[in-house]
Length: 526
Image 1: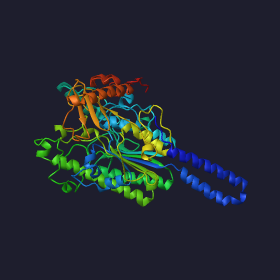
Image 2: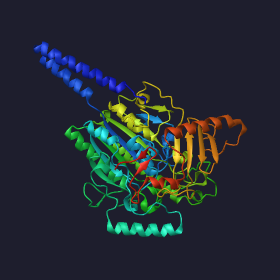
Image 3: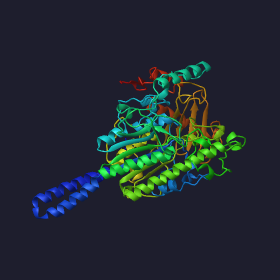
Image 4: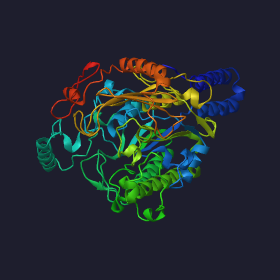
């Protein structure tokens, strides 16, 4: 795995300098004051940076001005990009909430962690990013939507494909919640994957009076709109760590902009700011319901506009507090939202609106401002990259690449393609061939290739055809490209130990309470 030596090299050189000055202090006792100053300078240089990862749910890049968005202005996200590095080819890999979160926390493929759909219990015995930073002396914190627990679906079974399934599932959920009214509480311990500070919930869509939990199953209510309240919590957390002089590693994960897209779920005063004559991508059919009645889309953009305002609050706090230069900020999202593109809604498909995500990284004075990078960036890369920037060692089993050298402009990563996947055809159940049929795909800097479980293939040139309106899979002129990408898919599937199974097959990876019992690598000890 590629490792950047830039920051870690600085650490070694500073440590060596500190040793030299210690020797000078011993030999030249009369220079004690000077040696003290030099040691203080060395200690400051050795201080590890704070890390703040802000990722919301379902924000597609082209909702943001810096990515070409036209329906809202996003001056704060744009300002963050101007002060840092913007990835133009950031890819979700698996455009679904829980699989993204599994990749983000572990740096591993879904087939290696077993996290292939929503509402499952992540393996608590594995080492994640918060463990690494906690063990390096950081105070770790998580605020917002966790969605790496089974929650109220704990005993809902594994399938929901038939009317009989629907009835059984509904009864099972109601019975479980009656018995466990705080079903979205994740207790302190291994299930939190190394996070110490906790103001979070597993899942809900109650954005106006959002429930959350700390270290007991007592339901707490956010006093403001969810994203606003979570930023309040984040600022309070960072202020405390600054006062205590301890570096922090914090993830903030707001749920909006996520369905329901309705006025009652929007932050107050934001829907009125959204234009009624929305600009639509050319791949949204003229007769699609969102174009005919754009209220839901306007609600989506109202939530996204609120995200931008909170990015502004974050940046203002970091700058006013003096933390900005000592804090790496990552802004991203778990996946996009189709919103009528290709005639589709939601996610779980291989198209740009679902798999492309925003990704901006800022570290003033270390990462040169205002750059755009076309290197492929994925959720499994965040763990090794942040470790690389902070001078920490990533676990050897990590599947991602360390892109810290790319960010610091000290090296180039030659990555030609990344794997994309949708493992199940229902976001919450181990079904096959129903709402969102299974597929695997390859994303290169230029092409998107997808193969569906039934055998159908699609190929798009993302440079010549950015809205993916012309499928080139049957084009004689592109058969060599198609053959190359077929081979590349086979190689990537082998790397991920992915047998391209139907969604029903993954039910065997979990017991009846959605605890992981095995992955593509074999049995899992709990």
